Image (tube, rainbow over all chains, first blue to last red; front, side, top):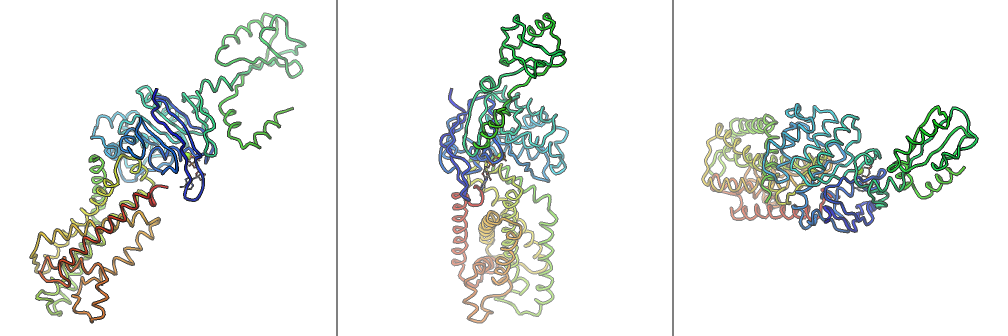
Length: 319
Length: 253
Ligand SMILES: Nc1ncnc2c1ncn2[C@@H]1O[C@H](COP(=O)(O)OP(=O)(O)OP(=O)(O)O)[C@@H](O)[C@H]1O
Ligand SMILES: [Mg+2]
C-alpha cells in the first residue's frame, strides 16, 4: 500500500546549531493511528512542524499522498489538519467565526452544516457564540481540534492532544480519534502518556534525541516485549508444586508463600481459569492474586534512557 | 489562487477593525479636525496664501498623506505582528496559501482601512476649508499606491519586530518625523537653500508633493518624479517582502 506520508532522511539543525532531527525515515499508512512517543525535547514537535510547513527542513524529503511538501505544498497542506501542542487561540473571535475562518484558510467554500457537525462532535455547540477568551483551557483545546477538522483533512496531527486535559475530555478525544479513523482519516499523535498509545495506536514510533529508534505494530510490540505474570498469595506456604500442575510451568516464590505463573497475554486468557480451578481441586487456597504486565511504559523507559542510565538500571535489577 | 483563504483573511482583518471602530476612525478624525481648527482657521488666517491656495487648504493633502502613512504602517504591522506574538500564526503558515496570497490579503486589508480613513479625513477637511481637487483620478491613484507601499512597509515591520516596543519605535522615530518634515505644513521653497537640498533626501517629500499636485496642480518637485519615487518605494518593499518569504526570516525556524 502506498504510504499516506513518506518521510525520508529528514534532518533539522536549528539556527542555534542544535540538531533536533538526525535523518528520520518513516512511512505512515493510510487510515492508521500512529503514536509518536518520546521524552521532552526528543524532536516530536519538530518532526510534525516540518511536515506541516512550520519549520524548514535542513535535509530530506516529505511527501503527503505523493505530494512533496515543498514543491507541491498546496496539495500537501490541503490534506492536513494540525492541532498544535500549545494552546494558541485568538481572544475576541467567537468559536463559530474562528472555526469557519480556518475552513476558508484551507481553501474550502463555506459549509455551515459541516462546521455545525464538528462543533457538535466536540461538544462545542452551546459555546458557538462565545468569545474564545471566555473559554476554559479544555474548551480551547477542543476549539483547536475543531479548527483542524474544519476543512475535512485526510491526515490529522495531534501534538500532545491530552496534555493538561481531564479524564472525561481525554476519553472524548479518544472516541473522536476512533470515529475519525473509521471515516478513513489518518491520525498521528504525539504523547507522553503511554496508556494513550497503548489504548489508541495501531503502530508506535519511539523517538529520542532526534532519532527514530523503533517503529512497530503495537500488538507485535506488546507481544514481543510484554508478557504477563500472575502472582498468587497462598493461604498456607507450599513446599512444592503438585506434579498434577506441572504443565503450567509454575514456580514458587517468597519461601513457598507465592505461586508465579507466566503467560502470554494474548493467547492464554482461559488458562488462568483452568489453573485456578485445578488449584482449588488440589486443595491449595490463596488469599490474594494480582497480575503484572510489562507495559509500553517499561519498554519505552528502557528504550529512551541514556545508555549508561539503562545499564545502571539493569545492574540495579540483578539481585 | 486560494481565493477562499484571501477572502477569509481579508474579512477577518476587516472584522477586527469593526470591533475597534471608534478608536481607529474617531481618533484620527478628531486629531485632524484639531489641525484644521488651529492651522486652518486660527493661525492660517494670518499666513499668506501658498501658491495661490489658502494655507488651510494647502495643508490638507499633507495631512491626509500623514494619516495615510502612519495608518498604513500601523495597521499592517499590527495585523501580522499580533498572530506572531500570540502564536496563532501557526495556522497561516500551515495553510495552503502562497506568499503572494498572504501579502495580498493582509496588505490589502490594511490599505483598504487606511484609504477609507483618508477619505473620511478628506471629507472632514471639506467642512473647514474650501477644497479643490483638480485631478481626482490621480489623487486616488496616489492614495492607493502610497497605501499599498506603506502597508507593505508595515507588514515588513511587523515581521521584523519581536516585541511591542520595536513595533512602535519605528513609526515614532522614523515615520512621524519624516512626514512632519516632508512638506506637509510648508512648501519646500519656504526653506533656506541648504535645507531644500537636505529635504530632497526625505522620501515623504515626493509623496506629499505628488499628492498635493493632484489637488492644486502645483508641486514642489515635478509630478513625474513623485510618481517615479512612489513606484520605487513599492518596488523596494515588494523586494524585501519577497526576500522575507524566501528565507523564512523571523517566520519559520
Ligand atoms: N526554534 C528553535 N531553535 C532552537 N532549538 C529549538 C527550536 N525549537 C525546538 N528546539 C529544540 O529542539 C529540540 C526538540 O524540540 P521539540 O519541540 O521537537 O521536542 P518535543 O519532542 O516536541 O518535546 P516535548 O515533548 O517537550 O514537546 C529541543 O531540544 C528544543 O529545545
Ligand atoms: Mg512537542
